[in-house]
Picture 1 (cartoon, rainbow, N blue to C red):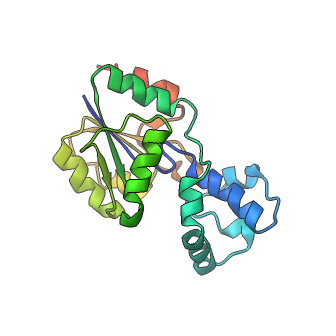
Picture 2: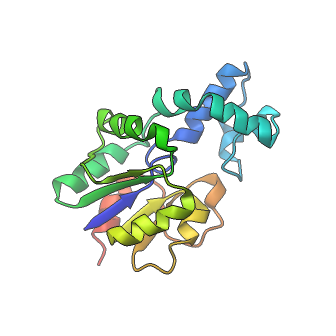
Picture 3: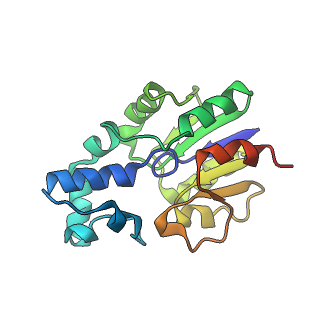
Length: 188
């Protein structure tokens, strides 16, 4: 089987990691309860930042956000390793900027994700993901972003949303824990 995975906020807890960094950099102590209640992907509002200021801050600290101690979601590495051991094809499809692609691939590998040559796609816009997913002929695709998942409804694959506070409105099957992946893949 061919399975595709977004990286940020699907396999790794990037927004929460960035939220901790914002607290640290801005000398704030905004609780995770505020983060968990956010209905948007953007995290700047609780810090009193405008959208422009939030975008500038993310851009300024992007490398630190992407490549420091951002943790994978519990069980994500093990679940993808098990898929690879079983002979499934695991693909990574991320809209991270092109200048961060090689370092992202390396980071995934160093953190235990089974990354094979020609199974890592990076540097496209969210709207371009659909073309890669279609061309790969994936059987399953997992992502957190509503706008990405909504573009895939016409493709003959099973899509799952990684459950996050900002995608609760989506009416598609949810992955709430990576321990569920084995059961999902083994469904008829």
